Image 1 (spheres, rainbow, N blue to C red):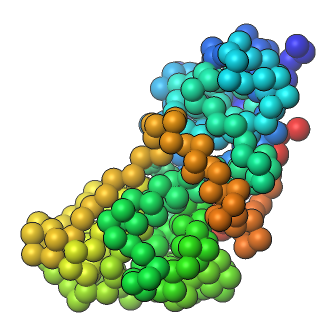
Image 2 (cartoon, rainbow, N blue to C red; image 1 turned 45 degrees about the vertical axis):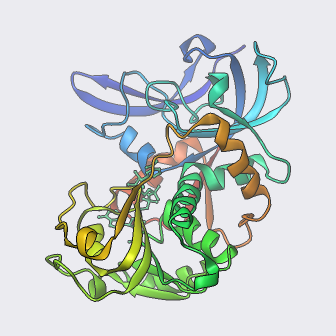
Length: 330
Ligand SMILES: NC(=O)c1ccc[n+]([C@@H]2O[C@H](COP(=O)([O-])OP(=O)(O)OC[C@H]3O[C@@H](n4cnc5c(N)ncnc54)[C@H](OP(=O)(O)O)[C@@H]3O)[C@@H](O)[C@H]2O)c1
């Protein structure tokens, strides 16, 4: 195979930098399946991966990109055949194993999901890790009793971002009727309503400067992606017996609360991890995205090339991007 294009992150004298480079197959991490990548997606973690002290990449040089979809070029295992369409999210992809911001990727077979019928390679990346995480959050909340039949008040934080925007869309598709989207700016309102939010709540109106021990009970379920002061401020406002799923730290890693919401109101905190979620349970969730959770009509998607990624990362750093960004690998 000739050389091909990939984003390579390097560390020289303690300085991290990245660029589009021409590389060869020998520079890909080992795995049973070689994939011609069609699309990747841009997640918060990908922005951290190219950042100094981002804490995502374990060893340099590295090709980032935690998600990819494409077509199998060669496989040494019977589970995957040449020409088969596949997708990959999470595990070590783009962290310690060369990832999706590349024309080719070599991936261990147990990280790969066959692309379900009804979902294109592009659509799979509109969902990507962000959508998969939104799905896991909703499934955990539903295990704790969230059900459209009870008309619960649900709040989604970081609703203009990747995980949050898809969570709003999936909740709407699932028949929930009280979907509150938390926004930092008035200007986000129109977009959030178009995704399916039934109410938009401004952070300045519900997140106190200092979290209360217990506040008025406003939400039965909170799907949180922001963490930090936002999650700390919301936990005391969850109804008796309600739950908060927590998957992210876009607003900080510290959680400042007391035990009171847990011991007086039975509030549950549900941790969500999409990275090491079991392989054998993934296919069923992706099949839902091809069917009952097919959300492409409402999705706001920006397609960028490998060369345009630096501008996308800059917007993501400040949270000023909207919706999902996918990378078309040419
Ligand atoms: N646990 C897992 O497996 C898993 C998987 C995927 C993602 N995550 C995590 O989930 C979080 C969201 O990921 P994402 O891909 O949806 O990211 P994203 O597209 O950047 O969205 C994050 C959103 O959070 C909001 N936000 C609030 N405070 C912020 C702040 N101080 N700085 C930046 N944004 C802020 C912004 O929405 P508003 O402007 O509307 O407030 C922003 O759009 C990240 O922390 C990511 O690492 C975890």
